[in-house]
Length: 517
Image 1 (cartoon, helix red, strand yellow):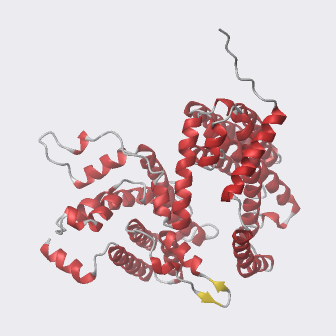
Image 2: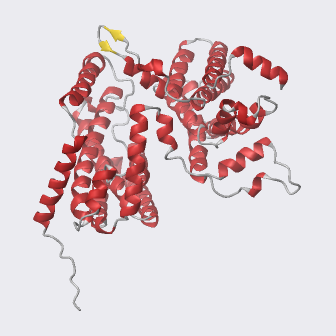
Image 3: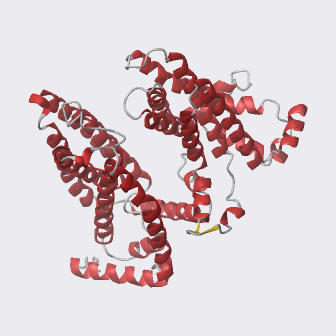
């Protein structure tokens, strides 16, 4: 009895077969129509004419908000560039673990998996095209942001090094994006460690060089070499990729995309929320009773260690940036204030799952009962305590390192930080009480510039960040620190009221339930 082995098709034949499958799949309705392309083009033209062109004109006729002329790529600039490269590389690896460049439409992937074509043939083309897109978009986005926010491209002495650094960092980000998806967790940790060590070496070498003259070129060359070293092994790993895991990732991405386009973004993000594991018995004491409110929240946070670690990092960093901004030290304090508030806002959602428990108990009253009792204290004790402690840890770090703060502003700084934390907690409550997309948001809003109903949907999807940024802008406009803090409390109270209305708790029913509780 003789057995025959399947003969792998030549590369040219495999390429032709992959193109034929892709074209047939596109004819099934996946190909964009003329009307489908016209609406995004209309939005791009609208954004360009009414936002981008005025912003670019205002930037070209006024000084930059942040000046880097004093830095001029001195020895102190290379460590900042290295830190940025490390953050971008690690972010690319993390993004690849959740939504990598090989995520395709589930049906197309199923068809290609059912053939005798090697995964390298139909995944390699997709990876190369998407990495090229990602690198190009990264370069353009970073250069545009640098042009609008800094004076980096005003002089040739800083423009060329800045462009080289941006290209190197974009290249290593694209390579790390693919590496994070196709390589194992151990390999990702090795790459992360190698990138961190390389950044330390480059920062030390640039500081040891005379006047740090060539530090920026070294900071641009090392990421490019690292991308060249990481890219080929990542592509060589395509034939051995776990297609079953890739199919699950593609199905989850397709479902998340459908949620994001036709419903709510938080439902799409829930698909990527890690499942709590372990520490179940730690919620109960030895005598059978539940632990205290803070202990329960801490245990539930430890059940998702990745989110807890991200929150433990973001809260102090956001608190430090927030303090640096409200104290009015350094260039562009309002930017530091806004960035720190957004960081605290993001960290406040990752401190545990108690926000979701509160929303479920408020929206499913027939299941959990009508009496409030200790519901707010039980659900909000841990998030409020964790966010406050993490933020003021960043404040303590600022005071510990004795950053240059204006004299006589310690009291107002603490007051503004406290007001910002209250505002962030109110915005987080508003976001977590979000349910399905309201139908009235889909009604057209006719203006001389066209239908702007899409802006309402976008504002509703990102309402927490919109509230935080708007609140920071209003607080910054108030001349008194006390007035800013009172304004923040009022905005937070409005967010709490709006969040309760989202869950169906009207004012009259709320007061009645509070009296019964």
